[in-house]
Image (tube, rainbow, N blue to C red; front, top):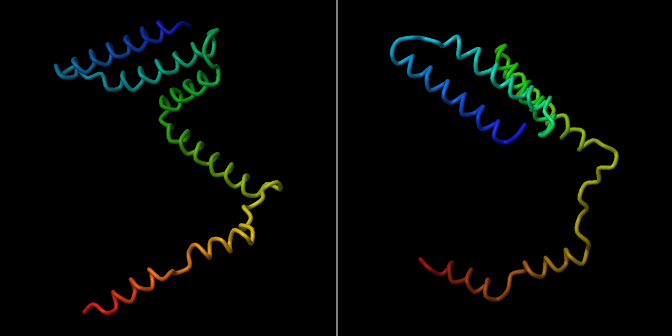
Length: 134
């Protein structure tokens, strides 16, 4: 499947949607048809990506699944499933045996930081001046 065929498909979908919106303005309602037609077109596009030579089969499956869930009214399952997989993966990463938390800095680095953060004479002078002001 070439890049051109994807543009043609998108162009046809946009023409169809525009025509249906125009008919709706005139008074002819195709709401149920749009609810079936758009998921069917998405599923058709996903199936073409799966069966085509170019393109990723994985993304074809994802697009087909998106259209199918949209068609049966269960699109929220996809998003909830992705969220659950992300949380499970995060939990796994934290609990796996090879996980080593970041170690504390070495003693020389802590001593250096204490010297840098130590109050110097200028800081003491500024503190004294702010106390004297009414």
